Image (tube, rainbow, N blue to C red; front, side, top):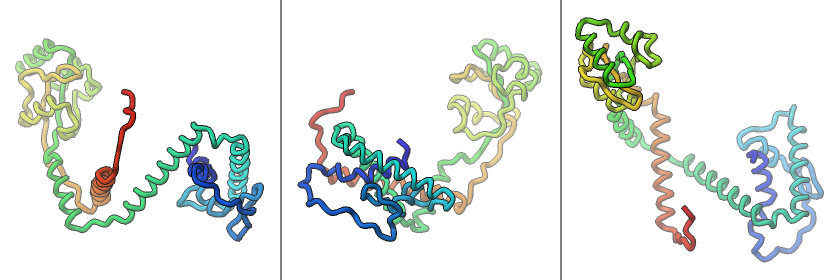
Length: 273
């Protein structure tokens, strides 16, 4: 469902979610005020409704405000007709509205708690240092020749032992897309490669190639390490927003776990697997 439509329908139909409560005395037709842009069968459409329909953080452009208001009027007419036909009493509709309400309220709660979060410099610096420690300190530039079975890989190693040119052999025999570049993979950190490939590269010195074929899910590799260099670590200020997101996610996860620990959760009927 379109989010704008969902929001306005939720606002209009929210009372049906509490339909089991005792009915309140029927009030007279709502009165128009300075915020009211239109009355549709005595139901007001306000400036706030229009702003919400456009987007909670955006105001409608003057040029299309009338068109948007017309959309809201049409939606309100459809809503009123749906209520007249008792669609809001159907179980499927009630479930949809309840789920929509849950999602919106949960999102609002998360947004407000996130906006209120503050982190000390010490917290941010500690998280930064922990993340930096997880990063590779060195990156590699290597070539490889990829073949489907180990036999041609061993034959290629023999050709290299005899003085064969690695790039030329890669262009001729490799089935990888890098063949046209002589097997050159450019710069990479170990985490970007399959574990057996990364381990093999880490065990080489620049100019060396693997003495045995290296198997990955792609096939069998002969690998030559061209050069290495230290990884330039990003400064704290550059990654500060990312660090704050990590801390926010951790706090929110802890908050949800606290709510769960304090709640009484029962499972009268287990969901079918």
